[in-house]
Length: 438
Ligand SMILES: Cc1cc2nc3c(=O)[nH]c(=O)nc-3n(C[C@H](O)[C@H](O)[C@H](O)COP(=O)(O)OP(=O)(O)OC[C@H]3O[C@@H](n4cnc5c(N)ncnc54)[C@H](O)[C@@H]3O)c2cc1C
Image 1 (cartoon, rainbow, N blue to C red):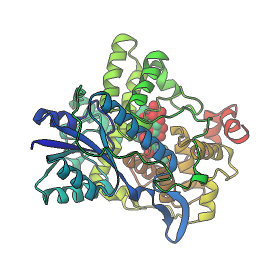
Image 2: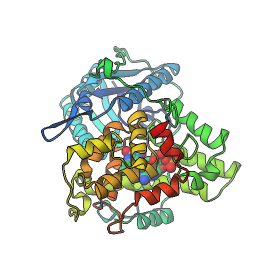
Image 3: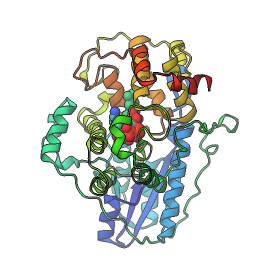
């Protein structure tokens, strides 16, 4: 049989999906599956200390479940289905591929350690059954094969990287979305509940109504957010002026939440920006959204270049002039928004109650943890990993290393003065009031 299985991970969409597109070039029998990795729900500990949070917290998990449900529904409309399993992908993907008599498994290539380790295990199991494994690069704006330098020569300063690629590289067009899928003769698999994934019923929190958006997982909701932000509210043309805001849905795109699970592709966003520039306005703001997506690309390529060091205390610089403490009491105060510094506390409470925080907020709270409290930055990054709806390994750890002075920041000892930042970005104290007294 010529059947092909698509193993989905952070690419929960049908549009601009190279593995799906390439599979259909080979056969009509293309089946899609997702395996929820149980390891993600293990409790995190800092050495001996239990933290009380999981690697993947409940808000992120809920968003993942919604995204899977949406993908299943979209596939069903096209005649297919999404096969869902819970367990260890290393074993399960090979079992499904065998059952469906697949000749090959296609997937998007991942970058960071745990994901690539899993790829290797899956591949090994597949080869034992004579099933081949192919990966495709596909979650960045610029394709890795188009970079005008080998990965080891990736510039360590963002501006040099950006200028190089903007001058020499063209962004590839999106892949078309298939219109028909076959139905696999296999159990579809039930989408688990949070409780079935190990969250205790009485402790399950819902995202607060005060959230900047009622975030809903899935490709449909991701595209709807773009429709709203670009076309209905016409906000793209003022993005550069509003992007440092703190309150409400409109100051920035919030695309990160859908980008993280690949519900929306960056190249799709890019093509919509071009269409907007043609049909509405082209200005600094329309460019600036692309500029920010290039930052996202950059952190992915930095992770590719430096491998595991983005997760290490000394970062990609392999040196640090900060002496940081593993002070759990201070960490807890920071995490729970009880430091006594209102601007920091307001942001941390927003994160705890909604799973989101603005970029300005993230920079401030991260800097405060490291450069005012002198607490181990890796703990902060681990908490963000658990809590952020838009958690992306490369963007999260890349930004944390940057702020902790062990990443790509060309400026030595960058320091955010919190009172100054608060008076600039929250001059009337509205944001602080919203989260502290509201
Ligand atoms: C300590 C820290 C941790 C972070 N962790 C994450 C993370 O886990 N996941 C994540 O997607 N972003 C992370 N960011 C980057 C940034 O804060 C978010 O991407 C942004 O706030 C998301 O909101 P938005 O989609 O409305 O952004 P917009 O301002 O609308 O920007 C558009 C898109 O550009 C990209 N982008 C913007 N700023 C950055 C940046 N600094 N780095 C990488 N990409 C960027 C995002 O994909 C974003 O969706 C982190 C930043 C800091 C300082």
